[in-house]
Amino acid sequence: MAKPIEWFSARLHATRELTPDVRLFEIAPERPLAKATPGSHIDVLAPIDGRLRFRSYSLVGSCADGLYRIAVKRLASSRGGSLGMWRLKTSEQLTISQPRNNFELSYGRPEYLLIAGGIGITPIYTMALALKQADANFRLLYAARSRRDLAFADELASHIGERLQLFVSEEGQRIDLAGEIAQLDRRGELYVCGPFGMLDTAKRLWREGGRPAALLRYETFGNAGSFADAPFTIRIPRLGLEIDVPANRSMLEALEDAGVDMIFGCRRGECGLCVLPILETSARVDHRDVFFSSEERATNGKLCTCVSRAASGCLVVDTPDRMPSPAHSSAGAGI
Image (cartoon, rainbow, N blue to C red; front, side, top):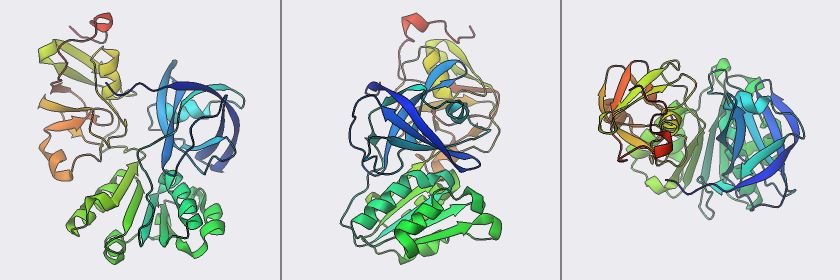
């Protein structure tokens, strides 16, 4: 199991619309919590389908005033997290975790390139402010579908000026990832947060350029996948379990509900802790992770259960667990 999360009481202090689909949430913890460093996130327990489920959100800004700020994009294709957050009212009680950082910003490099796509601007925004304060050599490339989707663009322009370059896909503008990586100082660092395709391409180009893996840092806000979310079934022959996965639940959540003692970390398809081997499949596997390479995903040998799923049908997988937890021995089972 992953290290247990320590939860704390908080309340929703205020909200503000950043774009038609992105809302800023100001959250006030009931007691001071840890200092947030650039790239940090908090976990929030949000009501989803009548149950409290946790979702991770990058922190925006320094949080020096004691408020934690997160930006949540409302997604019709989400499993309920964004919709649950958008239903929250000012002063409503929340439960949050301490800030944690899996996307740490380092200092002292000769050059930095920050790349953000869509809502991926949330951790990158804070990094840009920190690098500006440190008088570092950096640029920020920020891409979005339309100009109205450019959350924080005005604030960034006022803080970092010409270091910011905007790209609007509706206007035919694209980031030249290959060209930008090629001109980056060989000792420089690249930080990327954005959609699956952007991250996959950046990782491939970085690898093909022979650059040190340690100098590429990335985070994802999720991947909608190649297929619409649909129900499917998991079979674990060794445990004698058959588990139904609803369209609005992840494979990892369904396994947990059935009492299978899973190991997990990021729940975003980045760390690989929740990976299970695939023994057999009767349907296309929709890989939505950034942990595996495109070549590894093509083999359908393993999948990240936190984000990936089957398009339909049944996945036969294995797990290192010997038995489901006694209290859940029949939960979700179809046998």
